[in-house]
Length: 123
Ligand SMILES: N=c1c2ncn([C@@H]3O[C@H](COP(=O)(O)OP(=O)(O)OP(=O)(O)O)[C@@H](O)[C@H]3O)c2ncn1[C@@H]1O[C@H](COP(=O)(O)O)[C@@H](O)[C@H]1O
Image (tube, rainbow, N blue to C red; front, side, top):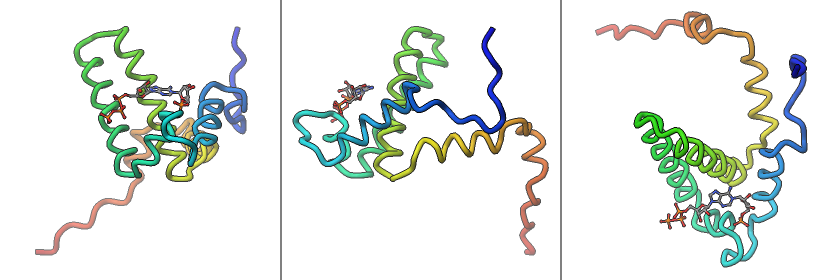
């Protein structure tokens, strides 16, 4: 049986997402004719973000259409393009894992209820 992760555990450094992050990081500023990641980042942050958005939309289309196999493939595209966007923005995966760990165990319903109520328009 798989061991339950401890509260302070982050994702192992040899995890596929970390390896992918390190690969994309190593491509930054390299020859765009040899690397898709380099080519994408060379086109600027707007393009990087746009590609992530497009892949996310393609992913949700497969989800709503119930295309399981395509959903798996598009999900991989989304994760790859998310990583390119994080690398381009200088955000590390550990920062994202830390945020997930911070949220762990707090129900979204409880968290939403704890937010301060929006100020009502005085007009
Ligand atoms: N996981 C991926 C991955 N997923 C998707 N893609 C590429 O993303 C591209 C998406 O194609 P699109 O036509 O949508 O994108 P585009 O060519 O930018 O098109 P336009 O916006 O110009 O129309 C395809 O070329 C895919 O091969 C990926 N390219 C690379 N990786 C990983 O990144 C690593 C490094 O790749 P390079 O940077 O190419 O060395 C690889 O070893 C893989 O592990």
